[in-house]
Length: 209
Picture (cartoon, rainbow, N blue to C red):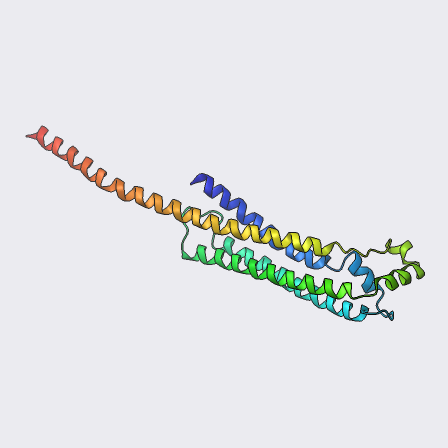
């Protein structure tokens, strides 16, 4: 049980950190190549206006998801899932809410990132690079980047969230099995204590007689 309790404490802290990473990801989503295209706002370039609208909408969605992620990850701490020796229905509900949200979060992030990438690939990147160099942005903001890095971070965050969800489920099952095992041992121990108590009483009676 000690090993499981140590594991559950670490797992709950890690889960909260992953939730915080959801907010960080949202704040950094428009970095790199995405940010460079947004800086070209106002230029007449094929697909650019649609991309900027898409990435701004995606950024808002991801930020809301990240904030909710953090709030949801706080629920197990409110239910004391990180330190309880025995889990109650509220503990399982709190963990269940986190797991369900992690799945929803992963699906929404995947759809959002793929949608932004689709609009990104529809932009005339060659013309964007030409304008980028023309306005000498390379000196101030760096070389033009046609390979944005934030979607890769999004995929990694999805993978981490899903792995964490699996670990949360396994931890709940582990806790349930340990609790059931302890209960069974206690039930088996009661008759032995009764018998032992009876033998002791009989011995006392015989000594008195």
